[in-house]
Length: 316
Image 1 (spheres, helix red, strand yellow):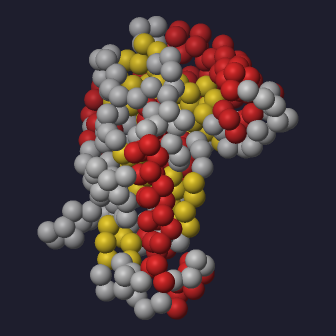
Image 2: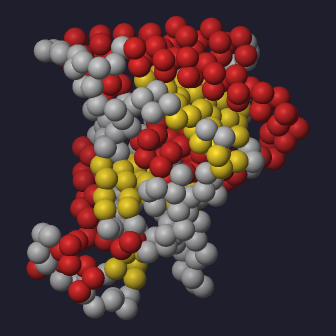
Image 3: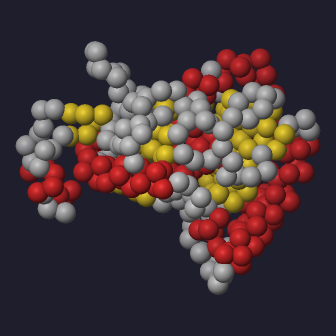
């Protein structure tokens, strides 16, 4: 959806003033829902069966949605709702609320701090505005055609253009993903461990993407994924000056099988680079120490550099 995200500015220009008011009111609703989840946070919620786990997850979702749905419905009464945050693919035409009332819900149940509340308005399959609120820190990330902000301060993506100096991140497969996707994720992480300075692997995806928008993380990639995972971050990164694509550098859409977010880069003449980061090519990786990242400065700088490593289409 890189082209779609970028052209949101044109699509929303006529109604930018009303969209700005809508963003502010959406942010108030998301913060209110976050307060409800913050009150429920603190102790590890034990569960001995999958049914107990799913019930606890649903309780969190319902508590936040009881706050979000009435307000967002009042703000946009004709907008549809995406009922399942794990759904992917394109939406029908018109306006839709894509909401994850407890992004990183499993973390919340395990008393881990990495969770958020998100709400994104999609208009004709283009994200128009988004709010990501982190209740434990009080931070609120917002994006609208014309800019991305953290508590009112403009966001800008990283300028790092060397993968060897980069901090990169990915999420993990959903429980229902195919074996092919799971293996593709695993092999891409292995490739990144050879090339990047630091590789972070955790959920939820949205928290990695707000860090890309803020310039703290240099790139994020993911195979498959749901709309609620990626749409908020896609708009934030784009409006912070970044680039969204699939793993081959093609425009990303909700139907894409992969997702990449990073700073833009001017491609070399005659070559196509899906990301602004490059990875050194070392033919003797297999012989290196497993702690090679600590002595990278002692290596001879490679002459040949390749795009961000990752499996080619059709490979597990």
